[in-house]
Image 1 (tube, rainbow, N blue to C red):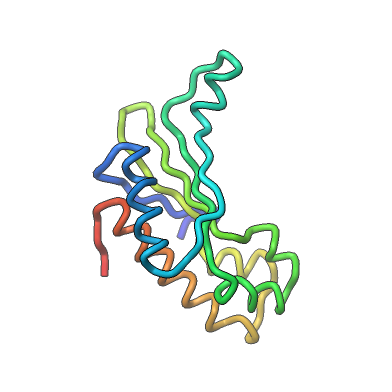
Image 2 (tube, rainbow, N blue to C red):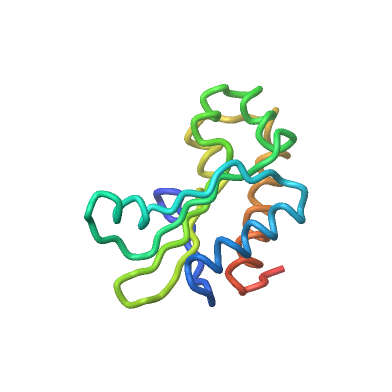
Length: 136
């Protein structure tokens, strides 16, 4: 985990396809997709350039509620988010906040320990599937 809690996994696919794959993966896993935001399209609307960049907001109350029961401030980082983005060299990345970093950020304790572990493992799994790395 990076010191800022951000995990980035290189994707084998373009930004839109990576997010499409993530939508399919999280819905198949029983999670909800709350929003999909195309930041590049937003930039275009104001006459600005931005490499392909899309955000997916997703999750499930079963995972996030224990974190908020422990410390309600965790709700600022929930539902989960993943950002697919293209770097200056044309590589595509899928980035997300590490659940253990979120636990540290909000001072989560024993009450939400199992939920944090499950979120960390589940997020890594759906991100790997979407990026085409399939780390099991």
